[in-house]
Length: 194
Image 1 (cartoon, helix red, strand yellow):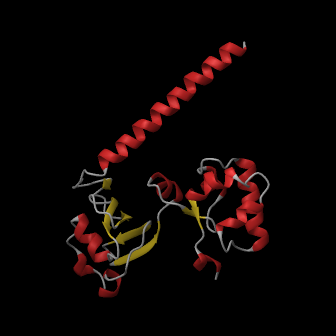
Image 2: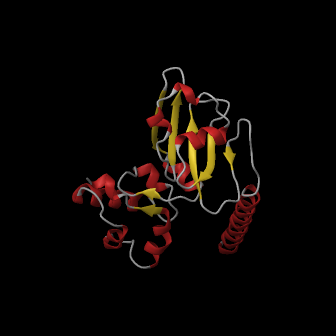
Image 3: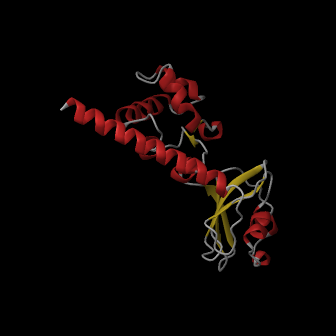
């Protein structure tokens, strides 16, 4: 029985390793591909790019890499949207940050800038905000299971918000190596503490 389980574990480990190699290879290949016309993801090989999601325009919605410091107008140009004249100048000049989600309603002339979902941020290699993460968000982080997620949320409820990520070291089961495995997936937005 033990050899059967060991064989299955080895087979599973090989499968996971193959999947990881495939994902990393795909990421590197996609980095040099530029998608247009209804792109889901648009990549350029710019070192100072940020990932921003565009929603509301069905033909050009998706995730785009744009130059750091870009505005909503720059995103519209990248996406090939030519109805910028329907929006107020103040909306078009709004600066964008990594992981922003720009929602466009061209019929009402409204632009809303929010944040991408945690699952999309993690898929793009971007950390999620510990002060706004839900239980489901935390469960997406490798190394955080249901018990640990509950402990993190309990500590956040007790303290009001996290001032820094190092507070997680105080949670039973998240010290030492466990902390270092998960810290790259999380950050603290101090603005959410005000």
